Length: 217
Image 1 (spheres, rainbow, N blue to C red):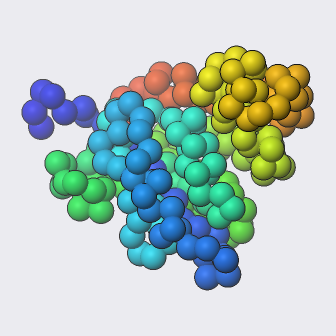
Image 2: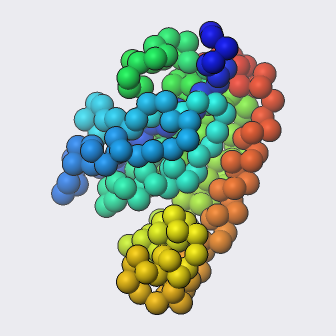
């Protein structure tokens, strides 16, 4: 592995819940998905196997804001999302993730498969550290449960406020009073979700690196 390449990678794999029963297909989101930008994104989000979406990021990260962008972009489709962190052993340099392989992919797939008994838009994580994964999974479940109750108006308020940084600017984009932006974010418990997301992102950075290669599968 060259010095320029990181030792570990993060793989995000998602599938559409009840895809055959939906009025629209994930293929209709193809262009918007490929345009998603994020620091460290090595491959764009692409679609395979009919209703699966996947992308790869460099490093050990838990990009909850990117996961949220993915969910927002794919609405009204509901997504199960599996995140795997580990090494990539083949295919690095491919234009899409589908030509790559390795423990990060195995873990992402297992995290996703672990969600398929529920027809709910949940997020799973596998890092190789079972104790961390259980604790993170509990927090992810709480985040997803809160977000599952967001209305379209709350989604728009949250995503626009996050992009603009202040209620006033978000209000200008949405064409509503800034008090209404704040009210929608508060009703959505955005402050709690934001803190939980930040805590998860920080915690994954502290994972001992040897845990990420334990078993390497």
